[in-house]
Length: 81
Image 1: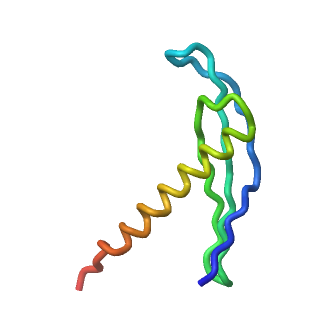
Image 2: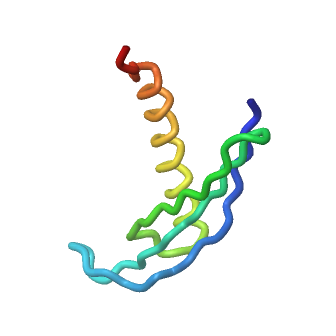
Image 3: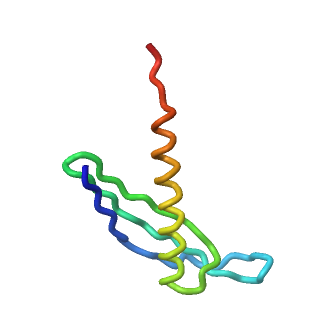
């Protein structure tokens, strides 16, 4: 099954305090679409990146790790008899 991943939007949601002082907070949302099957939006909240582009790049890395872990989890899933 082919899957398309598209960044839908990146929203600066404010500032939060960290050990480095005030840092930007973001929500980056990706749209995942499979061939006539699964269609889902995944919002990824994060804090720290100072720019729109850096927030997108960090969120994409988070999404990649999540999807890799999800594939591994499916190999361990067993349905009861």
